[in-house]
Image 1 (cartoon, rainbow, N blue to C red):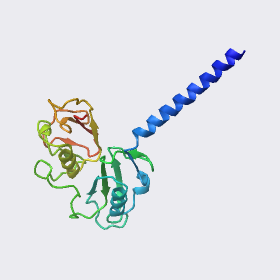
Image 2 (image 1 turned 90 degrees about the vertical axis):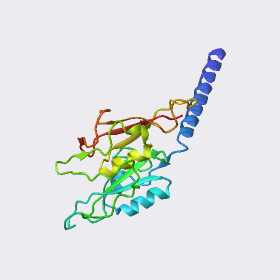
Image 3 (image 1 turned 45 degrees about the horizontal axis):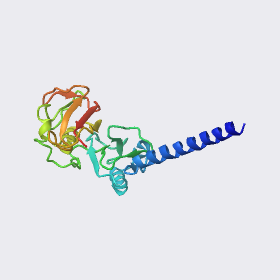
Length: 216
């Protein structure tokens, strides 16, 4: 009986130790991530400048505000009010959900035609593309053959300026020495599952775009 009790006590101690170790490891993995100050639904209808400020105050660095140029009178929607916010392609995130500081956050807001341009830089690896959205679709600003010569930021900037809103960046974690590929070098960009496409090919603005790049 004493032996059985000793074994049971030892098993309990080991279980507690394992739980403590795994819990510690799990919390360490998220130390570098930042909690969202608001949920996606809470950001909607706020003024976009307020949302941009709150996101940058907590440490997010890649925040893009994109005017929709959809207002005529402004009765139903206010100029500058947020329509949608996506973080790394996710549009239904919750308050305190954690993301990397350099995740790309795109804020789409209502505006009158001719409003200011997106807050992203104009240097996007090519001439700015003015999207023809008369059919609800948007033309790609780059072709699949050009992407390997661009940085992740340049590709994201070009796509957001063209009007695409569901963009996800995905590090491959495949580098050891970095002789064949450099850290941050793009491997491929898929658009709705397509990895071969031409500049001007048309997709819906919310098509899923995944940018995969080499990383340590």
